[in-house]
Length: 286
View 1 (tube, rainbow, N blue to C red):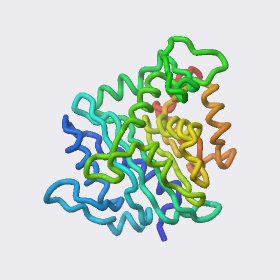
View 2: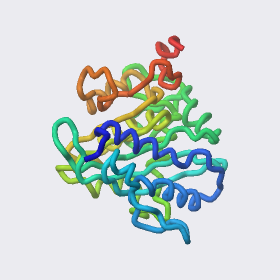
View 3: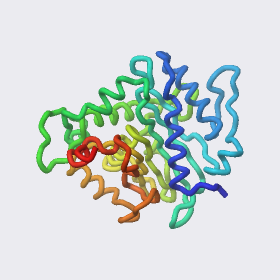
């Protein structure tokens, strides 16, 4: 039996998504291979990504903490100006213990800001002046605007850019489910007994709930028993109507949790500056 509970295991997998941070490379396939190697000690991988280097199976120490996970999709990475702008993978476990029982579970883990990526800092994190209507995003006709339409759910242009890139990503050639984007992959897996959790830290904490809501409203997650999100330290991805739309489709579980044991809510440290962005009332608290 794993030592970590479901929340802790998902957070562990979330942190693994950041394994491409601090690499400098223009070769997306080579960086994807390194990503695969970085995941190998913690999540079983079925292929040899780099000639002469055989990935190990799950280390005993990690398995005791998180249980037996395998790589189901990816990993995928995009490079912008010689740094990883976005990284993501999907892990699978046949039996994860939740409060209401054990379920087969997929975890979509999204990387946060790469410290070396100016693109992440400037474009995906800080491009919040222009807004995009979420209804337009769902229809594939997004048009950024300086206006924040009253009563309409909107996300920042930076969040929209990150979402678009995640939906475009393909697994590295040595990875799993090569040739399938994430949406196509998720439409083909699941089953009524399987759960899916979207998770990410910092930038990933803004993109994970946005991606989960997008895919749910597009009908791509209908094959899953339930959809949950576990974002940590995420900046605000959109406006109040967007937050209300998210809560309508993915309400917090439990409703009034006051610890890290909560789904569909941003898990934060009150002294962390990142989750204070970009809502006016929280920016004032800084």
